[in-house]
Length: 253
Image: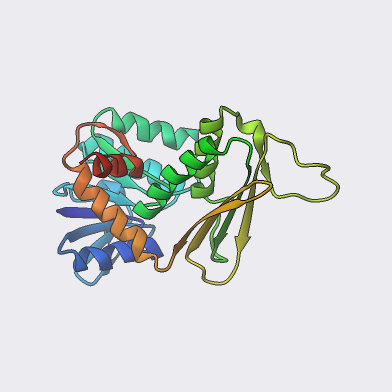
């Protein structure tokens, strides 16, 4: 598998290079804000200079970078894996446009463990409809967006399972807030040190509580997930896919 990495100079981009080598895959080029190289891998700063003899693109960049590489993939009909967070409607629209032509895999968290946890979250939200739900996400001090995309995804799964709309979401609490409404999901963000990533989902009832926790110990986890998704995606037809689709195929297979 010949891979082009967008955002190759970032922590996740470099992790993809390292894990690709461990998995026997080949990163043939990279895209970032400056032209340089990583060992024998050329890094370009202009998408127009990118080689087209690649099988797939893996993107861990910025919203602007994701939009740019999605346009390049559209022009060159290349499948895309993107784990960039903080995408707005315009960038997601470009991703959906691309998914009409080639297979595209998008997720704010490339861990298959997180994807499986999502299935647990949906089940718990349905099975315990009266439980109070709180989401706590913890990340390193350099993370730019809050709450995390993964926390938002978990929140959407719970909203869908319970038939609630986004008015049920509250982001942190301060001051005199009064009694907790029945239809509410609290989302809380912590930024500290070099924590790779942790997500806790609390389902609290009068006589018991369920706490689901996923803790990432090394960012190579996300790189390995992206590379696993890339191998899976190359066998798929055009469309927009997520880790849940991989979990579903494994559970059914």
